[in-house]
Image (spheres, rainbow, N blue to C red):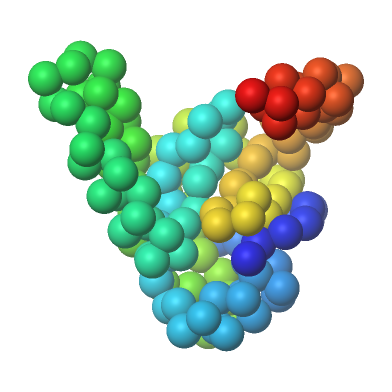
Length: 145
């Protein structure tokens, strides 16, 4: 559904333009609403509404009697915002999410199949460089299990 890597900037009002390919995918699937929340590795996760509902249902299954489950759900859902793209395909990133992801101006938007991730440019470069060196080892571990 979402694939590729795109470099963008955020404007003074905290808005960013979603890449045209991603907007086309959303439109083609009749999706108007997306959800943005804290992701892992200091990035933001962006889910189209149908995928958000799937993730939400899965996370509801985490027992609230387990401390780690409560902690994860609190952080994941309390940071979430429901967003409709404006007519220019922009979305407003709230201050708390920009701070979480260390986003100032330059960022990278990547497609990760069913979700989009938004990274501060420096964070993405660091993650990408360290992870690329381990790519084959990681692939061998997870694909052979």
